[in-house]
Length: 609
Image 1 (tube, helix red, strand yellow):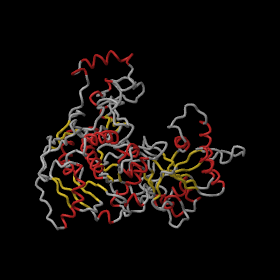
Image 2 (image 1 turned 90 degrees about the vertical axis):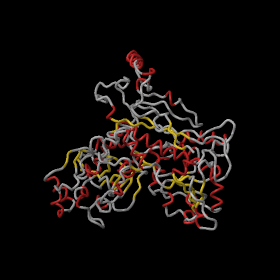
Image 3 (image 1 turned 135 degrees about the vertical axis):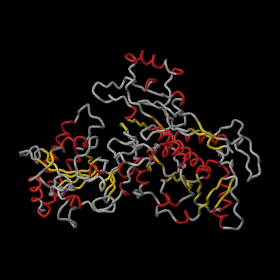
């Protein structure tokens, strides 16, 4: 932070305006000047009449487009975000930079520093002040030579500007008086963040083509999966948004690809889940997730049987993933009308690092829409149909080249041969969720199934919590609240458990049903049941369930905490132990009941030949 501020100072002293952004900001175009400066190739937008005269402009973490319209300070719970900052070469900007520098120096060597105290959080403390009004606004515009904008100064659509006290606009060894500076916030639709772009789809909101709403930057905030070694989550999001430009040509052209056609779950399945759980409940999210997570498992298995790269299906979320409290399953600062479910990123549901560590060959959901994918891939597609009554394609017809019809119970290990019979040069294999479900979950041997189970348990599990305010004790987080008291701790739903394992028969016999197409009766019934819910811990502040890299469970799902009374790694048993013991003794079996409609390890038969 100190190095950055020193660099900014040198640029300002050199007489330059400075536009700086974080490394995880993607610039979509060069239309920034319409919000930041007079005298450019295009005049500022009417909404930017004041911003274009202010000393400092900064992006924000505001999530509500309606609240952001006039450029008021971000709503409670949102912050200024130094992802994009513009500093005009003025005494005011120099005063802010020196105040920022002094704030950092004041914390240097502080043993209480943590990840929440950094150059951005200190910026928040410096860049704060009162809104300019009346004659102050006119003076600001006159100094910028924008007298033609005086009539817009008080317009409700014009973004507001503020004044704050900075430091002396000179180096410490030079004597000068402190100076004030003016600042404003950049609009959230043109200067978007991770939530507004990926969760709210600001780029497709009504009016997105208008200059005042046109996206200019995407800041990869509110994402998951990055480590100190590599930004796994950010890279994956950039790929999903078609904003990652450095993958080699082989990424798009080499090998065979497998993709799902059609939805992950049916409208009837969604309606049934939504009738069972209210919108605020994370259990709605967990129930729908269990369906799509099982489809991803089957796609992953089939891709390995085919030796193909898995093209991820479009995923949906019925809850914002957020480390704090949720309101109606949305971040507290998000608009209440934000649609649920919404199409969400892979890192919202899966730990991308696990996939990369295990070298899973996969692609983003819209991969095949990328212009860099050769037509030779998409034109050499074979659609796999698995149905008891589907007619076999007639020999010598085009349908024979583009489809492979199989009967329910066909092992996954035999799909590749069927695809090659249809087209020996196939580059793309397509299959629907119902067809995929009808395949026998058999990769060729018990050992191969066991190896896959270890892999899928690891890469398809995740540890994320969803803490609805609707399920909390009313006094949570207020003065006097005791987080070590399990009777008043957060009630959070945790996920995500991996789907059910594939069968591992001890005798090595394929557990598949009879296959009419092959005319060979197979041992085993072929029925398969999947979890109906991805919950690991149902109502606990912390959860001790996870999967180790080798596929071993940290704890059996049945033993995972069902509520805070069963423990969460922070209970004060000295103070609350007697009350906990008495409360649990009064419950059936001495354990907390699951919420209505939820039994994480209960399984439903999803296919029975």
